[in-house]
Each structure stands twice: as C-alpha cells, then as structure tokens.
Image (cartoon, rainbow, N blue to C red; front, side, top):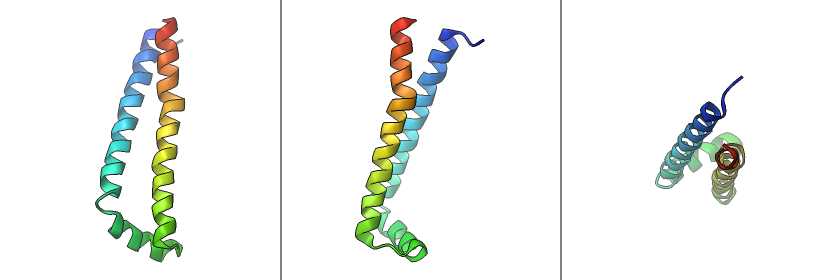
Length: 81
C-alpha cells in the first residue's frame, strides 16, 4: 500500500510535469500556428478557423484535465494528510 506522503509527492510532480507540457504546447502552438494549420488542414480537410478553435479547445480541455486529475486530488490529500 502506498503511503499518503508518497501519493502526495506523486500527485505534486504529476501536476508540475503536466503544467510544463501545457506551457510548452501553448508556446509551440502560438508562434507556429501557421505551420501547424497548413499541415493539419491538408491532413484533416479543416479550415483554418476550425483548426484555431480546435487548438484552443485542446489546450483548454488539457488544462481542465490537469486540474481534475492532478491538482484537485493533490489539494484534497494535502488537506487531510
């Protein structure tokens, strides 16, 4: 059985790592959007407007997933440990 301290540390590192990935994805998608849109538009047959919306939705959903699956359990465990 894993201890509460080990689980707390695990969730903390998961949160940090996932936020770093989110930050990197945001930095890459921002300035290189034109390159990605050209490639993805050809592959998936979507308009640039649809792709811009999809990129924003991806980043938003990833941020919410990090909060739900990493940050909130870490906060809850911190409060009871």
